[in-house]
Image 1: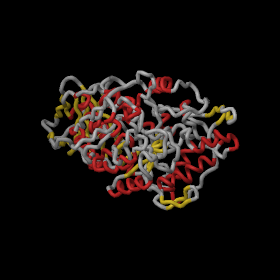
Image 2 (image 1 turned 180 degrees about the horizontal axis):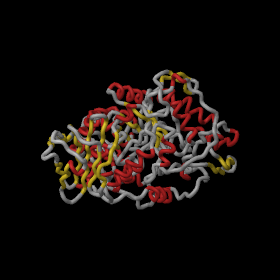
Image 3 (image 1 turned 90 degrees about the horizontal axis):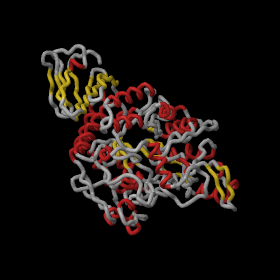
Image 4 (image 1 turned 30 degrees about the vertical axis):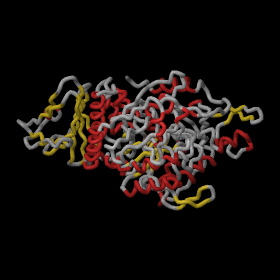
Length: 575
């Protein structure tokens, strides 16, 4: 089964789930949105002044640690239920089937993330991308009702502080998923506007065309036309100042900050993944980055700018931050190692990314996430699909930019279904967000899922421990090989069935070979380089096997669906 193209998926989900074509209707009960792409033009607001000594040495450049990061994406409500007392809105009686239950709160919480740190660490990750946990209208966290609190279904602020501190004690970093483009229609700011219209101090924080409280008639800018997600006007100075002067330091500072007239300790997080970053203006993001670097000069800021084919819009916004997630490379993986097109698409996407991005910027890579089908499911959900996942992960870890692994992908997690419900309520993305299959074979042991286990249709998957071991080994290799984190990329062969590229940093060189064909193959080093000396030795970083020059030409054997990472020792001409 293949992924539906993103624009089609969005349009179908919105039409089925909401029956909306435009914004501007009366505020209704919340419904699940689909993410979407939208841009916003804005006027230039007043500049935010930042002391020179508070800014990173190279403002706008990604911190060095970000280039070396191995990022694990936690979708909080579906990762692990660590504290049943927080299951405030978990209601198995309300849903008769697992498909229905997936649209509801499942019980994952911050206590569960704490319990899962051993697993995350042993799988080789040193950075956590934590999904939104603020007071929220939905389990996914992207409908903010309060930017500074923690939803009771996730725990409390003290547990969040404990998670950050524990991650730091393990030399791990934590990056928070922030959603500044829009709020929930249940946010007190928006509710106050609905009651008072122009008399509300937050009226200009949103983009209202019509506001008649007496008649109950409202028209306003909304994220992708979804009424329950009114967009903020972040070029309105008070709204902008709130994020720059309150939200940013609250999350990033390790010192006391002022929040709503009170002095509190900052959360000391290590950066932001910024949802729908192409919504707010470029000017907003420029000042946001200044404020973030003032709060923490080592903060890492990367945006979500969704475009499957073109790096240009990603670069346009990413340059105002420290970078952006690489969607074109995701698309290339989906259509190449995923089983549709050729491996040459990966090289083309990497070359395009390197040409488009400023060298100071970072474009984290991913194979799947909370908005697209699971890689294993999309690739066929069989043994071959799991082998394709191994090849894709090996390739991902060998490429420039930090890898992101979505929770469960490290154990070859799949999904139980796809497409809208028979009642046409939509919400296809619920299947991309199923409960993590904790078993006693994993650090932390089996975890109960009160909701999933109480309804019909959920079967706990068996985690693939071979894939998990492979991910951990790839993490070790990437940590030990500077060529893979800071080295240059040189494409050697980019064919439909064979991809070869080198990563080199000074004298350290790593050769990557990726093969996808029905037949096994042999790759001679002489096919890649003009001259090969007798002293050349290739060491397979995954198996330890050494390939020495024979008649000046080491030969590497590859299985029909295979990938190899080879450290080069000895003299070879530059690639």
